[in-house]
Image (cartoon, rainbow, N blue to C red; front, side, top):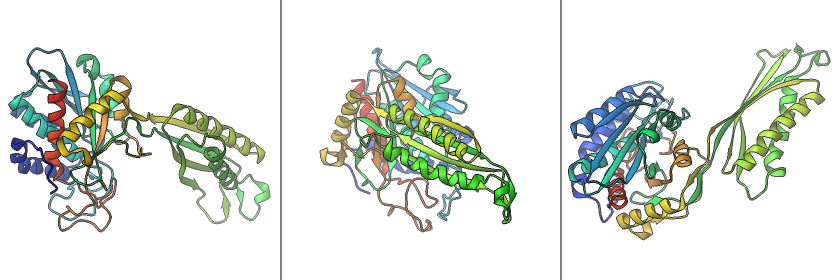
Length: 399
């Protein structure tokens, strides 16, 4: 374990129990909006530490409330709880007990780090104000942040600012990374159905081949980012699925394409959606086919607020040193529904280094320790680091 200079001793002494909690959660992963057992564990621990809780927000969400002193100032700390529909290939003792479900993104560790902070804050209370502990369901595509907000998260519990954190493989343990402004991209999905005219494969002139139309559209779509978007605006258009046909001697009636679009700004996203529909419609018409096009905007870009980002940087640097905090990391095209919270409240989202994977015990899979990989495992050395960061952030904000 790479040990930062200024970890909180009581949290270090609680490390083994935090590890036990984390590995228990890893062994019992639950998908989006199914996090009942996970929420039970969170609620049980918070109640054990005399922290008032509210359950059911956003479905399975849990909010813990710690008040001290008389200040009206408030802060929100958020951890996501859901797992992924991934078949884990690790074989260590805390491997997933549920086939086809896995904590492949480290949300088990995020929950444990926030629980570690909650325990210390409830016992020591070196702050003046209110801390809201947000244990959120359904980050992995379910929009659980938005669901909690729709259920009154910010209206019932007004917060001056809200902060989030995610482990990041490849960054050294004991390091942090962040950037002000856009840090993660918007997440959007599309599907296109090309309606042709089925025929015998030996008589293509008798039909309208939707597969050939799909190929033409797919190639044309790849010119949208390179020829329509401003080169200074980062954008990705990826076709991830093509489905058509069921026999070698039949041209099908339909072909379907599915994929994702990622941007950091709304303007290129608007342009891409419009051009995709125009290109698909006119290309299909040229071949005598028709289309049905759907474009769904899931998560907005995650944009860190400048003032709160600098505040978080000061806290992180005070914890691990200036050299261990990257303050202008390269944004990622990955998406995160904490973006919804940052649209409503000022705040900051940071990465905490998860290492290269050497921490994994015997029995891990042969794949890399990357997010969403069946060989992934959260690095338990992060638990006291992340918990200490949360505590120091609260104490500084509510000083």
